[in-house]
Amino acid sequence: MSFEKTQWVWHNGEQTAWEEARIHASAYGIHYGTGVFEGIRAYGTPEGPAIFRLPEHLARLRQSAEVYYLQIPWTDEQLTEAIAENILANGFTDCYIRPLVYFDSEHLGIRALCPVSTTIIAWEWAHALDARKKEEGLRVTISPWRKFHSTMLPTTAKSTGQYLNSILAVRDAEARGFDEAILLDMHGNLAEGAVENLFLVRGNKLLTNDEHSSILLGITRASVIEIARHLGYAVEIGTLTLDDLLGADEVFLTGTAIEIVPVAEVDGRKIGRGQAGPVTKRIRQAYSEIVTGRNPSFKHWLTPLRRTATVMAAA
Ligand code: PMP
Image (tube, helix red, strand yellow):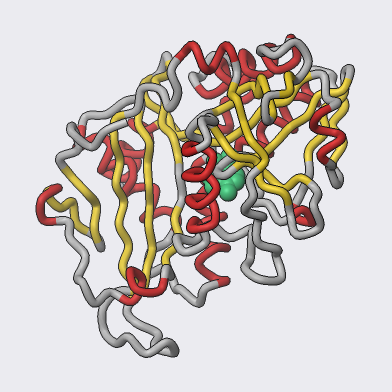
C-alpha cells in the first residue's frame, strides 16, 4: 500500500496535484476528529475497472455525515463522477479509494459549524496482507481496549475520531506480537476486529453480530451475508460470546481492505484446525469472483468506471 503513484487528489471540486492537496493547521476536523470517510475498492474486471458497491459506500458516508452535522456539498452523482475521474486521471485499475468529508478552518470553538471540505484520495492497491497470512490465517488477541458502546459514540458511523479506539487496539496487539485485535463490547460480548467485522462458522451455519454489539455495519459483512445465503448456508445474526469464538469451527474477518481473512488462533488457542477452513475458503472464492466481475449474478454490485466516465462526459 503506497501513495507513490498517486498524482491527483480530488479536493473540493478540483483534481489537485498531490503536493498541493493540503489541509490548514487550523482545520476544525484535525483538532477534534470531526471528519467522516469511506474505504472503497476498485478492481480490474473483464470489462475494465469497476468500483465495488459504490452506492452503498456513498450511502454510509452520508449517514455518517448526518450524525456529525456535516452537510456534504456534493450529490452522489457528483461524488461518483469525481471518484471515476480521479481514478482515470491517476491511471489506476486496482485501487483503494478514500473519500473524506470534514469541518475545515474557520473557528476552533467546540460549537463552531465550520465550512465543509471534501477530499478524495485513491492509491494503487495490491494486497493488504501477504498471501501466506491470507492462507494461514491471522493470530489475533482479545484486546484489553473495549469497543466503545453505541451510546457513547455512534458505532455505525465511520468518523475519523472514532478510530482512536481501533488504533489503540492495533498498537497493543502489535506490541504483543499479534496480527490483529478483536475488541469486546461494553458487556464483554464480541464486538469486532479493529477494522473488520467478525464471522464464526459452526457446522453449515455462519454467525455474526449487528449494531446491537457496537459494530460498524461493514459493507463486506453485508455482502458476505448475501453470498453465504446464496451458497446455501444459514446465517444467524445475534450476540456472540467469547465462548462462541473459541468453540467455532472456523472464524474469519471481513473488511474492504482485507476482504475475507481466516483467523487461525485467538491468544494462542487454535480455532478449528488453525488454518483457513472449507467454508471460509468457499466464501472467499465467491467474493473474489464477484469483485472481479466474474459472477454475472452479482454484476449489479459493480460500478464500471469507463461507463461512468462516458456518461458523465456526454451529460
Ligand atoms: N469495522 C470497522 C471498525 C471498520 O473500520 C471497518 C472498515 N471499514 C469494518 C468494520 C469493515 O467495514 P467494510 O466491510 O465496509 O470495509
